[in-house]
Length: 515
Image (cartoon, rainbow, N blue to C red):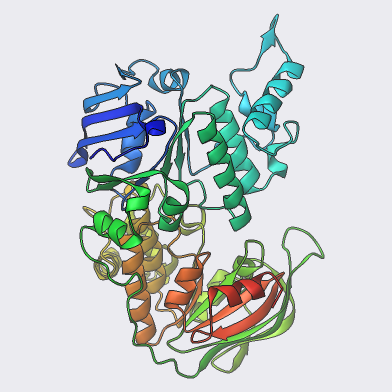
C-alpha cells in the first residue's frame, strides 16, 4: 500500500508495520501497515471508530510501547516510547495539535508557546528571550500573531496558529493535526493551508486528520483510509475521487451523498417577523437586526451564512436561551408566543440540537440512558419517583430507532464515537416529540457514513410532518438537504431562496452582502 512518489518525497520518515491495539472487548487497530514520506502532507481519514485517533495516540506516546503489538520505525529506528512516553515523543520531534485547543486563556501567546519550558537565568524567567524566541517561530512559519497578546483576546483561527507554534517550538519534524478546521471560517482555513505549505517547504511532515473530504483533496499529497481498525488503502491524492474515497471509507457504494427525500411541505408552522435581539453579554449590543422568515410543516429549512452572521444566535434566541428580544414577533401555528427559556420552547414543541454537542448537548460522563431521558423526565415522573421501567423502555426505543452503536444504555457518552454521540443528542430531543426541530450544524465533526444516516433520519422526520430548521457551515449540505435556504449576514436575513434557484454563488453573494 505504498503509493508512487516523486523523488522529492521518496524518503520514508514513518513506517508502521502490523500495528495492533486492543482494548477490553474491542480491537481498535488490526494489523495496520502504512508509510509516511518526509515533507509530505499525509491525510488520514475513515469513519468514527475506524482507528485514526488510536494510531496517532500510539505515535505521539499516549499509548506507550508494550501496550500495542507491531512496530513503528521513525527515521529508520524503531520507536519504543516507554517511561514518560508523551514527553519522549515530543523530544523526538513528534507533536500533535488536538481538535480541542489546550491553551491557557489568561496567558500570553509567548507564555503558552513556552509553557513548562520557559528560558531561565539563575532561577528567573528570561522574558525577553521567551518573546524573542516566540517571534522567531512565528516569523519562520508566517504565523501572524502578536506574541505578547493574551490568548483570550484571539479568535479561534489565531488560537489554532498558537497551538501550531507551540508544537513547532520543540523543533517538530512530524506535526499531527486532528480536525484542525472544525471551528474555522473559510478565510482562516485559507490561512491554515498557506501555513501547511510553509511547513512543508521547511521539511516538516504533516499528518492531517479530517472528515471534510474536500479538504483532503485541497491540502494533502497522500491519503490513507482506515476502516474498522484496518488500513484499507494508501494512495496519492491526485489518483482519488470523492466517490472512490467514500467507497473505501464505508466499504460500499454511496452513489448519492444526500439521500433522496419525498417531502411535501404543508402549511406554515413557525413565523418570525422582524425579530431584533440584544446580546446577553454586552448591554445594548444588537445581535439580531430584523430577521423575518417562516417554516412550513414537513419542510427542511436551511440557514446559511458566514461565521458571525448570527445563525446560531438566531436559533438560540428562538429557543429562549440566548438573546433578549427587543422587537418583532414569533408565531407558532398562527398563535403569537413569547419564549424566554428552553422549558418554554419545549412546551411549544420546539427542540434544539446544539452546535457544540460535547459542551451543550451532552453530559459526557453520564450514561446514554440519562442523557436521552434528562429533558424528558416529566414523561416518567409520578408523585414521588421516576418510573424507571418506562424510562428505560422509551430510551431503548430511541436508541434502536437511531441505531446508536453501544453495548448497552449504561455506557458513558464519552465512550462513543462522534457520530453516535450526535445520535444521542438527537434521540433525547426526538423523545420530546417536537413539532419544530432545530439542528445547528448537525453533522459537524462526524464521518461520511454517519452523516448519511442523519440525512436519512431528517428526511423521515420531515416526511412525518416535523418541521426542521438546519444550520450548516457546508454549502453542499445546505443545497443537498434543504427545501428553501435563508442566508444570514450581519444579524439579518439577507435573502431566502427556493432550492430550485439556490446555488453556492448566490448564497455567498447574500452571505457577503454583495447580492
